[in-house]
Image (cartoon, rainbow, N blue to C red; front, side, top):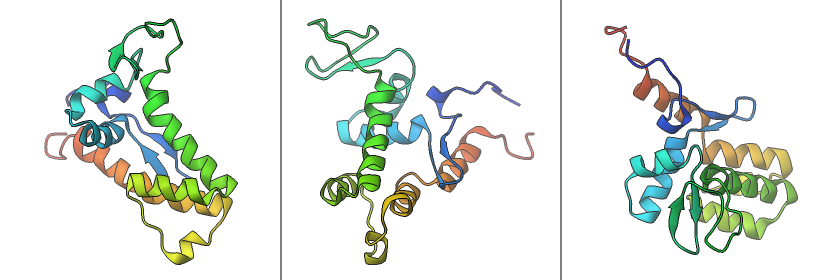
Length: 152
C-alpha cells in the first residue's frame, strides 16, 4: 500500500475551509514560490514545514529563529503561506480594493465585474475559491498520494 503516514512537508495534508471551498497544501505554495525564486519546488517544500526560517536580509535559510542581528524570524510556513492568505483575507473583508487588486494581479486571479462588486465574506469566498480552490487541492492529493485501485 505504500507510505501511510501523513506529513504536511510532502503534500499529504491539506489546510483550508470546506465551507468556503478553499484549501491548499504546502506543495501548492512550494510550486508558486519555486517559479518566482527560480529554484526546485522539492527544496522549498521541505523548507516550508517545521523549524525552518528565512532571513531575508542575509538571504539564508536557518534552523534557528533568530537573525544574525538577534532579531526574531518567522517560521517559513507563517511567512510564505499564512501571511499571504491572511493579507488576502483582510483586504477582502476590509474592502481595501487597491491592495486586493495588487494581490490578485500578483497571484494571477481575475475577477469578473460582478465578482468585483461583492463585499466582505462573499468576496472573500470567491477570491479564495479561485486562488486556492479546494477541489483542485483534493484532486492533486488523490492523484499523488493514493494508490491506483488495482494496486490497492
